Length: 162
Image (cartoon, rainbow, N blue to C red; front, side, top):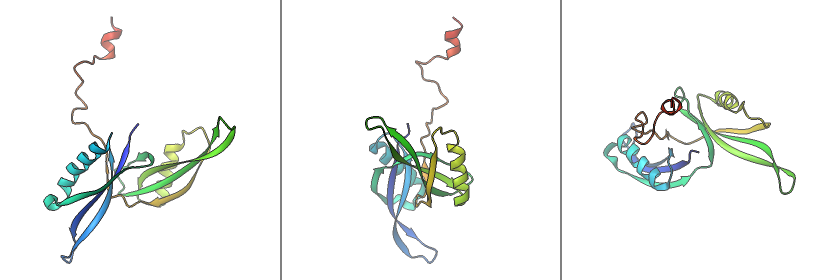
């Protein structure tokens, strides 16, 4: 399961008129710990911020159940999905809310993409809200050596042929 962290980065941005303004931008980072999230956001921001003069203002664990990122869209929409779940102890039905992030060009497209991803759910669900989020970008985990097999692993085919 992926853990997403919200990293808020504070830096000096110069606008078109040449005025400097201190801004704080939130980013989403895929990491296993707060330490890794901090390390990854530093690496990413060193490439994006001129002069690498920035500070990490805050890192917090996000409440996103899943993130659906599409290359053709820049806007990120925060979607709330609710469904009913049976509490086994009380035998009562309770509403469960989950949050997901979807990249799309408009709200209608975000709704359609979310519907497409959730179409495999067995339980009935509702999408009570879709709002534009303030997140600037998403940094997913990408291993540099994903294609290289680990030395202690063997292909299944070699075991099946014996």
